[in-house]
Each structure stands twice: as structure tokens, then as C-alpha cells.
Length: 314
Image (cartoon, rainbow, N blue to C red):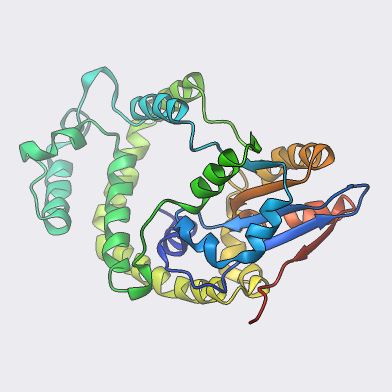
């Protein structure tokens, strides 16, 4: 898990106060009515929408809602999950004991005992034996991250994710639902699986480098979560400029063009087409808003007026 993933996870789990809102109005450039963007943190509880009247007012003016994915389409999610599971599973019924040496397994088993308090060879771990090394490495990172987040009281949150609540509300109101991305097809996931399986030796090398430098890698995660607390405070305060100007956040976005820049390029024509048809609410991750390749700047470059809607003070 890289720094961007850790920061995103931290923000996603952070309890957000009523002043948090990255809500923007889009107007001009021949639009008859404004459209809106909510920069979300994907797993924030949707209950927070009730404390943001500005969002509710903007939503009431819209006739359609576009999200990254329609995560309420359970059949598509189910199909994609099944194909995705195949993509991260070793081929031909192999296990990690078939692809890793005895010495490598011993190191992996030691780290398992230290981290998860269970032997790798325990029957309870049989499912993990079938995953490729990249998944095992990510599991270590995720576990360490979750443990560290428990030390932060602001991480205590629960409820239906905000993106899903936005979609459910829109469907209840009869709004048209659109997607900026498409859930990966089974063919694309099969290609991903084949590519990953062709690079098993590289994955093993990465896993072993991680395990041999385990304490340093763990400390890096801890340090990054601590640094992410500042971004959480910016979100709570609704300080978009502070969030957008974070040098670490911007550096991570630049390092991941496929996640941010290239997706924004694909999204922009869909966003423009949707706005030209009807006033639209767009809901997607806040990280896609910022930077020279972010959606806000792309819209401004295309001639639209984009302004943040500030929280109304009582």
C-alpha cells in the first residue's frame, strides 16, 4: 500500500464534522442551469449529508447524478467481485508453497506470527495460500494501517458510505444515474490475472524485500498516518485550498497518472455532456479535484465557472 492509499484510507475512516464539505457549483459556458460536484471520501458515513444543507439544496436542483461507479448495482458488483477474486488467485490450483522456497516461507511464516498471531501453516490460513504475493504484501500493509488507525479517536466511524447514500437518495428521487467509470469487465480482469501470473517472480522479490525490511516499512506507515491527520483537519474545516495545496498529496497524485490524470481525461467529456443535458450532481473522490490535471482546473480551462460553496455559518 503506497502513501496515497494510506492517506486515502485515513481520510476515509476519519469522523468528519458538520463543517466538512468540498462542494462546488459549475456554471457558465452556455449552461442553462448550474451543476455541482461533491468531492467525497468514499467510505465516509452518508449520514453526514444531513448536516450539509448546501448539498441537500444543490441535490434538489439536479435531475441526474453521476458517480465513479454505480455501487448500488449489486449484480454488477457481484460479477466483478467473482472475476476479481480469480485475478488475484494463483493459477492452476497452486499455493504459495509451490512458488516460494523453504527459506522464503520460513521468513513469511515468522512475519505472519508476529503480525497476525497465527502460523501461516495453520489450517485457518488456507484461503491465503492461494493468493498471489502482491495480495499477501497488501494484507500486511492493510492490517498495520488498521491497527494504527485504532490509536486515533477520529477514526471511529461507521455507516453506509457517502457515495452509496448519494446514489440511493438520487434513485429514490427518480434521478437519472450515470457512471464516470465502468466496472471492469470479466475480460479485462482475466487479462489482469494473466499479467500478474506472468510476473510471479517479481512479486515474490517485492514481498521478500518488504519482509526483510519489515520494521522500517511498518514505521513508514505509522509516520504517514500521523502526517495524514493534518489533511483530516483540513477536511473537517472545509479548507479546500489547504487540502489542494498539500505537497505530499500532490506528489502522490502526480506519481499515479493512471489513477488520477488519465481517468480525469476520460471523465471530462462525460461530465460536459451530462451538464449540457440536465443539471447534474457529480460525486467522486476529493483527490480527483485538485492539481493542474484535476477536474476543477480542467473545467475552468474549458471555460466554465467553478466556485466552492462554503458552509453557511449559523
